Amino acid sequence: SVFTGGFSRDLPVEQLVRYREADSKLPGHPELGLTPGVKFSSGRLGHIWPYVNGVAIANPNKTVFCLGSDGSQQEGNDAEAARLAVAQNLNVKIIIDDNDVTIAGHPSDYMPGYDLKKTLEGHGLKVLEGDGEDIDDLYRRLCEAVTTDGPVAVINKRPMCPGIEGLEGSEHGHDVIPLKLAIQYLNARGRSEAAEYLQSIEKPKSSYKFLSSGDKMGSNRNVFGEAVVSMLSQMSAEERKANVMCIDSDLEGSCGLKTIREAYPEVYIKAGIMERGNFSAAAGFGMAPGKQGIFGTFSAFLEMCVSEITMARLNFSNVLCHFSHSGIDDMADNTCHFGINNMYADNGLEDSYETRLYFPADAAQMTACVKAIFNQPGMRFVFSTRSKVPNILDTDGNDFFGGDYKFVPGKDEVIREGTAGYIVSFGDALYRSLDAVERLKQEGIDVGLINKSTLNVVDDEMMAKIGKAPFVVVVEAFNRRTGLGSRFGSWLLERGYTPKYAYLGTHREGGGGLWEQFPHQGLDPVGIMAKVKKLVG
Image (cartoon, rainbow, N blue to C red; front, top):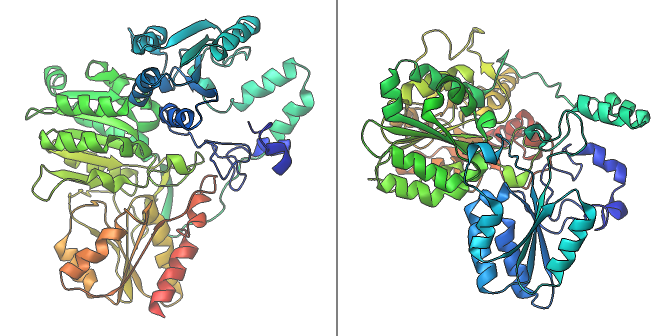
């Protein structure tokens, strides 16, 4: 669609080499209103077929096409959409790329019994299945679909990345082609100039040096899995098998769960792209005292599980959840994959079963956090980012969370003292806030910094401390409308504290890119310092 729908008129075709770059209008998931030629925002799996049903209802005299995959068909939304399309005889034609590949492997291996043709026929659709690489047969099946009244699924069996040596049939063909294989492919076809051009492209890097951050970059989304393995290693084989079950939703490599599977496959289930059902399965396993389910996926998909979270809480389930890719950092997939509404997980009543939300600041604190909460009952949500984060340093240049540091759930921590006011932050916003604090101190504004790694528990001792300060600013990558900042001011007022108050958070649609998302939202040190100076006057 980018070629036929207006892309070439508004942006040169050469712009495609800027895929996922900041301000390129080509995020990982193209968006309506941002990417020329794109008519629908469809980045989250399983969401577009139900939407297309509505388009078909609104346009009863037209044939509506929907492109999909065997992966997206695993989502429960598509089962509901199929039933509605059949019941209303909607003229929707679902064109499905069935390559038996998802990010975590092959559905035929990890989900035996899942047969796309039988599934759709069971819903009542006419299904035309064939070889997706046989162009003549594909054309015939498409013609038959168009001339058939009502919903039809055209399933095209084909390998991932056909014809690309080293990648065909592999799950590594998801998204961009690895540079080495792309160059090999182009050179084999006499496209040496194109190969040379690809080699000449430099990966963009930020040259900004953050003050009081060390050079140990930790991947917290992987550290989570390592910390869980450490805790599991302290249990006997019988205890692990009886009391723990980890359920993955096709993102094990992205959420750190792969480490758990490799260490203890007997307590692990690869369950495919079915976040709602998988979360509930983990919650059901953890319903009895002493048992717990472990669940992980991207933070953006937490929004899909809100109702299931409520029911798990009402059933007193014990679940340790890891939602990676929180916030906006390194989120080239852009707005539809922002993990910014994480506070939705804290949707229970004040007297409901315990729910705790945690967002550690660096790798050492992530390890300490997981170890501290692993054996606690209740619903525990741990957040991490796609990006790596640096180690936080104390005033002497040592690791703040090193040595004999112990994580205490519910307690906030003073990272830097201050007399002019305090910034309250957490997660990947903490090291950016720390940089702003150090630079403000250099300018004579003595600002303090608080790490609030337990997001939904009020630390009254800390509130008494910062509530008497001249100002308080919350800095976070979460949604400004639903994040910590939208609550924190009320917590202060309820306790009789009235400092000047402001909060910074994600407030506009993304601009693409990696670290560039933070200045785009005004959440970089420059934006933080500007907000503080405005409050100070």
